[in-house]
Length: 371
Image 1: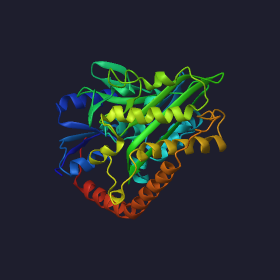
Image 2 (image 1 turned 90 degrees about the horizontal axis):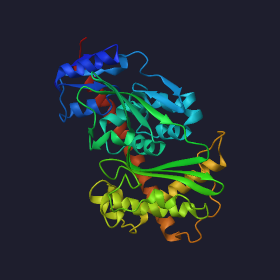
Image 3 (image 1 turned 90 degrees about the vertical axis):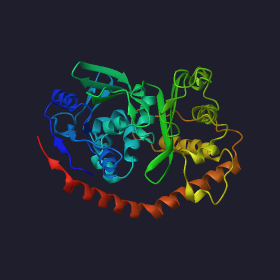
């Protein structure tokens, strides 16, 4: 990795100005958990990194008009443990706890995760069902966009070259809305993430939000606006229906939505693209095992949250009726799938942890500090 300068602005305006002056030769630096490794590998090269963590107050978490505002410098760990987040956004706190590994969570930021636009992201998928918004600043002023409008492709965003994300605004779910998130992943990266939220009034679903991530370049809502024009509006299909058997309907919508998002007839065909589980290639899996396993995990998390809820407004409504025709063989296959994933992750975790530390130690001696 070639040497670079680290600029440390003290205001958002100074950071935006430095970006504009660099004319594409600078990048924003918060945690650097992805950026520095990409530079070390020669995939990216910048003359200057602009450290936004030097801007006072950008790490703050506060409440504003029914939303929790998370500053761009707030780390995953800070978000996870923040009292306001735990009280009003308990699902976000839970998901932040599962991001990557402890080193990444202690250094990396929520805003940086979104701006790097890595397709395999937990927060990018979850924040779609929260309908979060992003505060953007630049030399021409500030603007606010929906979180779904930030990422335009793999590692691509809608930010102008001289703009930076200053805060993530996450609305508190309305009364009666409950949510859950579940993922499958190989090692530290999710390979499929799903988020679901239902608003219930008088036993009827009044609002349904479903999102899929990691299986396409951009996380998507399973709504009319989030899918192709002729695709089924899965969220609209679930709304205005009774709770009876609703979780089974959610599972079916997620499976169909997954096929629509990936453009594939069956989820197993994804193995050659986004979903890579080498340890599983030794034993063929049933055609629908992957999506059934994910919805099974979602079911388990909902049940666990309902039985051990500790917050006044839990994020799910108990399912009054279990699917009357559970696929016993598929659930058994899902259990085997989970066991194989856990085994692979356990075998490789220690070795990868050590390699990551070695890479990090080799990066920092080359940094030339400048102001």
